[in-house]
Image (cartoon, rainbow, N blue to C red; front, side, top):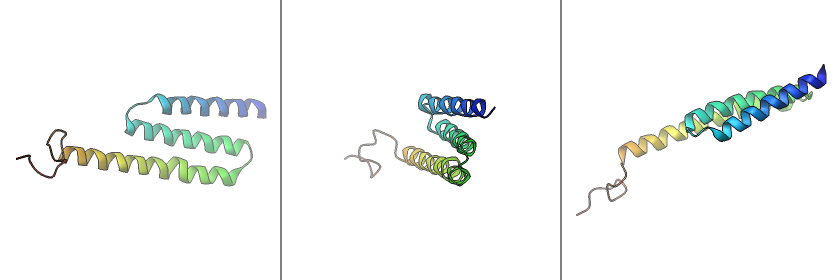
Length: 95
């Protein structure tokens, strides 16, 4: 039974990691990374490492996706304010 649980956890982690690589939209990538972090925490728990699992939940499932989402939001806002081709990187018009 324990071997089947380990195999299932490994398969789920492999599938989530593959999905994280294949997803192109950064917002969706952050969501897939959060799921991957949760699955890794489950895997660590199956391997009887609850302290590592708790760290993974905090960092891999919450903090990292949040930082990615905030970064994407800031980049998109900056791109909206400074559209490409304005000539000066958003500092004004060319003479």
